[in-house]
View 1 (cartoon, rainbow, N blue to C red):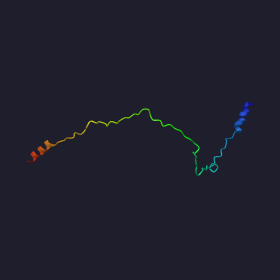
View 2: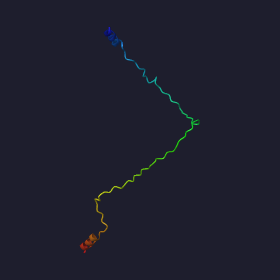
View 3: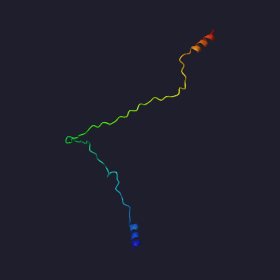
View 4: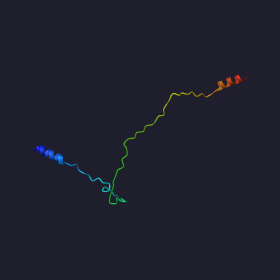
Length: 84
């Protein structure tokens, strides 16, 4: 008896059909929404942080790859000697 009911249920079972037509599901929104806050009292307390954390950024220090010279007196004297 159980087998016949199960077979009958499987044979006569049909998938449910959904009505997903685009024409039926059109959404209409209001042009303008207005909210009235006149009857509303808002009370608040301004809380400041108890502590402050200040982190200063250090500039990165690199090993100089180019040696900058402040004077070229030696090279100028050599060039003058070569010209004479």
